[in-house]
Image (cartoon, rainbow, N blue to C red; front, top):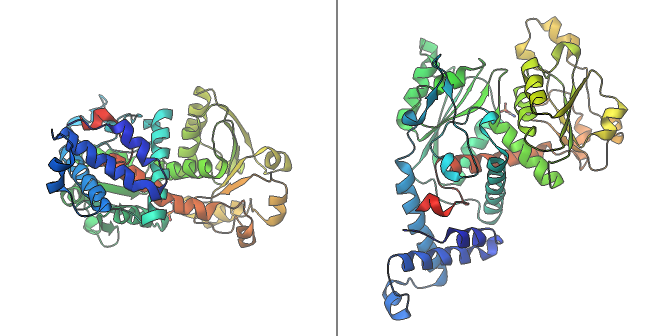
Length: 415
Ligand code: CP
């Protein structure tokens, strides 16, 4: 069956109060494609009693068809490319939603600009969905498994909220209560969760560990932070926040501030911003916590303007559109003395904010441990709590794309 998805996409972009029209279109398309003449006499026996039931029935039928089609594609093993050293090469994700289905998401380097545009549209649709209806049931019967071997408030909760708002359910294990305590490897823990779940989310303190575990994971695996490596889903919500706060990302100057040596959110975001033309990056850190060479080389190889400074001075503040603060990561330091020497080096206060643009967007992946005064929370430019909320919409979009039930789709995906 082919469905006029261009028409449906158009309807789906309409305000939520008109969303019943979207489902009505779906219903009509289903009827037509099933070979009915479409006249009232023919359809009448099938019609539920109200327009909204018609709309819901059409949507339900289509969702059920999507689900049947996509469930068989969720096993990843047969799709994975490996290097000659046996390392997993995660698949490129594109503007075609089919390219996301069943894939691992391990690094922002899997993304292209058109892929991000698809993601941003999907995430904005999720925000509209939650605002209008709280969610829907498209993940009904699906289970998300999360394995967190490092502490987390936002990532774990927002993934669970995202899945539950789409009608799915969640399982969670952590290091202290899982069989990791008995010596089980991460890879085996991940494979175990993959037996029970449709999608696995993993955070682990060792850089590269999540990518290694993905090599033997038969279900889509999402990197929720691998030590000082990457935090790619955080970058998705960060970009969504910039888009929602400023309208566009192209041409913006972004200052990444704090512990750039250990800050995986900064590593991922710097790489991802390279997809946007005219972006300028300023890396602000103590000299001992500067951005790793591999990230600077990546940025340089993409021709993106970057500079490194060791003080957050008035010049930097005056030209910055997005000020992205990060925490100095105590847990990554060899000694407390080393940490104490740099922990308070940057602090955003109302006085610092006075030096920024009126349109400045102040972001932070959180948690904060003193680098932003609570007084600053009242400044409308302080976007970090909105950013945190966007994490749920971003993760709703991501899981919908990976499990093949996005709001936005193409005709070819359904045919
Ligand atoms: N931003 C972030 O990763 O927060 P959590 O550590 O609380 O998940």
